[in-house]
Image 1 (cartoon, helix red, strand yellow):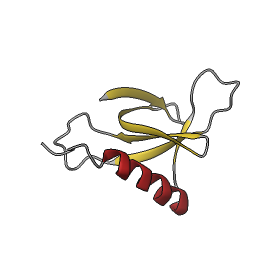
Image 2 (cartoon, rainbow, N blue to C red):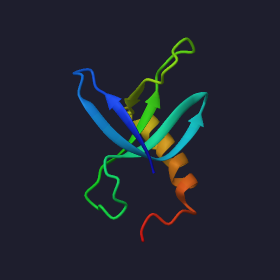
Image 3 (cartoon, helix red, strand yellow):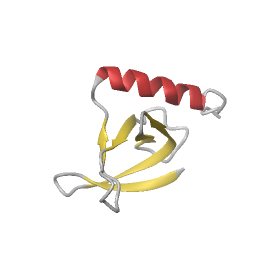
Image 4 (tube, rainbow, N blue to C red):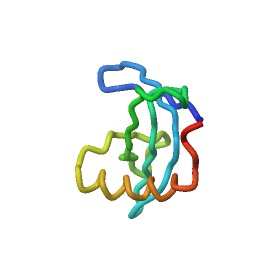
Length: 88
């Protein structure tokens, strides 16, 4: 899994590991987890949305909190991951 580093609004460094990425209605989304260990059943997963504009050279991501958006994008990720065995 690809490791990406985020800096929060409080300048705290947080590492996430990308499981999958997709584009829905012109917006980029990534599915990430907070653990590199694939066997960590306590790990949290998050859907992040790219909120940067075209002038930014770096992506800016926010956790998707809107329930309708989360459900819709979650279904897309479920379909993308359907053929992938996440458990070993």
